Length: 610
Image (cartoon, rainbow, N blue to C red; front, side, top):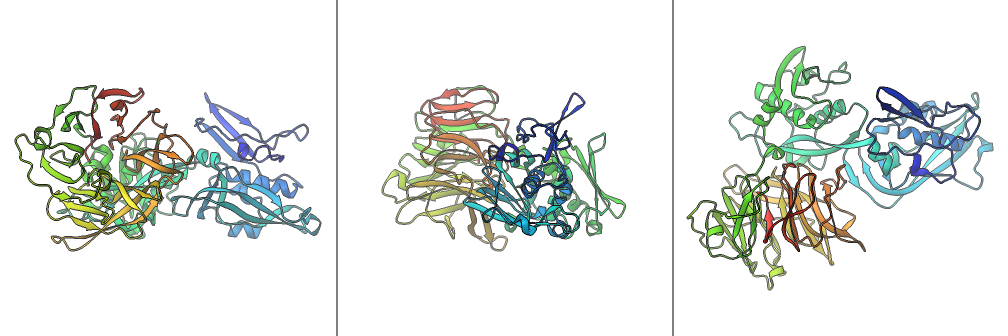
């Protein structure tokens, strides 16, 4: 655990750290160094040192129980692909039954290890150590991250071999355990992709919508092959109910596949077993698109994928072909940024350039006389929705000059502005979502295509009142700010639809989970990528801050936005090349890449389409 366990008075002779610099391999802190002199622990590897590799060192001759436990814990943080060295610290039977892939437990610091009982029982040939710490998260067998809290306590039992006279671990918990800094160095979050289950696989059906499913893989242990295997194994349990995979059940890499690496033309050949041998061309292209979307952020680059089964090519697809085969939100770039000006009208400026002078949005919401407090624009930028200044009425109008507005499509009867309608949000299928905060009848509502009778969305297990709504571009995930007992938390849920085509569906939001367990006051939030959100909030007793979070509750390995005071609203595009935009005490401000916050103009309620 290096620095994670530093200062506890134990030697750490269990890792070799290798630095690749200019083609020279440098080693530091290894147990095979001379056995005289002071042997010191290896510090945790800095996260920014991408070329660092850590190798485990086997147990030394006649190592004492404390050294065996320490060495084993150190070996868990190495880049050993199959934990072969870590198994050398175990008895033969324990090495056979230990399954490190079942889970990873992350602690604030590395696990402490103390012998149980006064003075231990080394003279009996058996001793037990208790591993302790404070939990941060767990990563399960599906590589899914789940925030955790509370005390960690697990025991490991060591025995002394009758013939060898060597101490080894005979009983231990399944999985691995490590401190947070070692976890950040060893693991990285990667989105794997499936398709929203409400889009068909048939050639005549709608273009499928890709949905990101973030998982954590070991950073320097062949992540490309890890991710292909992860895609083939299917979605995580949380996302599974609302997505589908185009890979037939049971599809896997062939037994002799080995490590997957693209060729000199950046084409990756993926050999599949016979379960995939009979798929049609359209389905095969969807399979290839899933892999291309998944692998696009890994290195080395993959520009095309060839799928093979039974010794024959099934299909081949390029990155461009993948974008044509399926919709992925992060490749869409909106034309405009929209907000409400000082006259309470809908205005817009071109997205992604330095313009600061807004133009009235075409249509009744920009050209009419209805005063607005918040707005939302459909993802195709053909339709806009606006909430009246008093929060009572929701209007929908086309973004075409000369269009009329008509009557409100929804009214709230809440007693005050804060008890009425939230800012609306459009999903990927022109559904308009909004929450009515009326204390007498709080509801989450959906207007299909922004018109007709509002459908009340069921929210079983929701504990609190919804204060903000943002639907993901994929249309199957939703972010809600929920208030209860003076705390506002960010929850991510799944959108389930039940009903036959052509009939009004029954819609509910299920499987709600916190994306910001350490924050208790969320001020504003917006989707900022396929599985990322930007949030403004504060920890208990802390100051307001803006940060990025993942839908699984983890923190992405990207810099937080530059500090900004007095933030009331924030918006981001799924295209991360576009600037973050906020409404603060300085009006409408934006944060271009690599720059500081810049004032745009006076106004409120900034939104990108969605």
